Length: 124
Image (cartoon, rainbow, N blue to C red; front, side, top):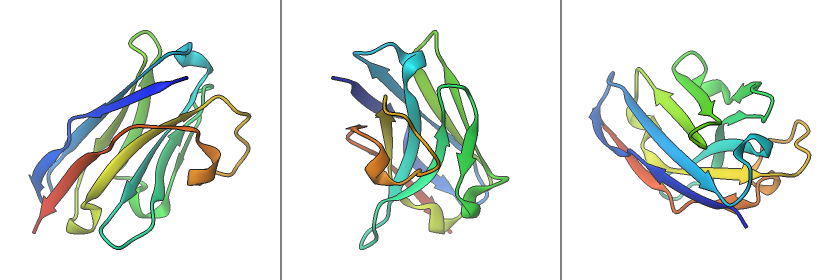
């Protein structure tokens, strides 16, 4: 069983930056694919960014050029650096992990272990 815990959410004004973190324990971190997802009120949970165990990354179109996902296998932590934040980025951000073979499906269904979420609010 993998335990995933997010931290670092908060309130930021539009145009600002914020970095959120996620620690995963219970399995060798370097064997996990990690992802960040978000869910706004009344919306479905969507994939934001994924980093494979190899280090290769995926971003949804709306965050490309603004968000950066990275991982530190020594600290068993994945980060999401968010720049040029917009009010539309307001959501609960969830970290997720999977040890399954991740092909090119970065949807919620591809991930097995989830954190409790951290709120990110961007004011206009």
